[in-house]
Figure 1 (cartoon, rainbow, N blue to C red):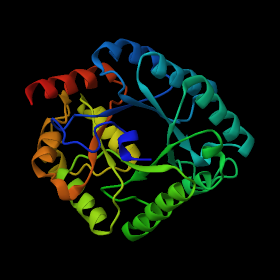
Figure 2 (cartoon, one colour):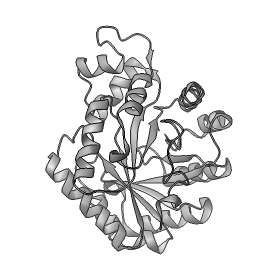
Figure 3 (spheres, rainbow, N blue to C red):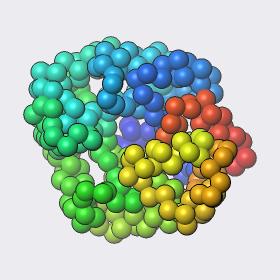
Figure 4 (cartoon, helix red, strand yellow):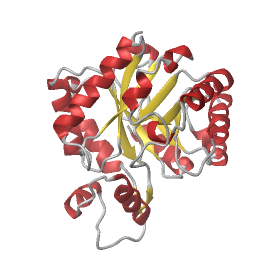
Length: 289
């Protein structure tokens, strides 16, 4: 499969940095998606997360809504939260039959111990169930600022293993990164990846506009670096947590620093529950560039 199948414009220059963006939502944010839908470009890829406190049926319904509203669903799979092979088989059957899902994104997940047979995303890729249900594109995680429990060298080894496994099972790999605030860390990570010969397209995670306290709370929960110097560069002072912050500086800096040698790159927005605000920010940025 060519990368044009992942997104029609992967092989073309971007009009600007938000061209071909994707968004993320939880299964509980269906009303928020309906509200934001008129502001979101048709065929935009919308990822449905796999968070605790949600039922599988909720996630299926959310994926169906994404499709019905004219967007392309990407369904997350959290390996350690899947209770059995039968449950995974059923879930994949539901999302593919009811929502026409062709794309998934797999992470190990937060639980320290697996709730079922899958300890990591590689085991799901190697299960054979993805291709059984017609999944074509498999996203795996990238960590521009590192991971609290895994060394940088190990992260590269595991990324390559997963990419190789996806291809061995006849599917197309994609990398989606955790959100980050530091454009220099993102660009350095991309350069390192390309120097290692990893040519897979990347969706770079960026925060949508949100309250400063909310941004910092998600950063802490996700293990994202939010030092005073990094946040100052992002446009936030840790001595003043009142108000909101958007990704204007981050996205603008990425647009200036990324070149052809960084390979195929698009943005993935984490709205933190504010889909409409993120869609408005994207449209405003697009209009100004």
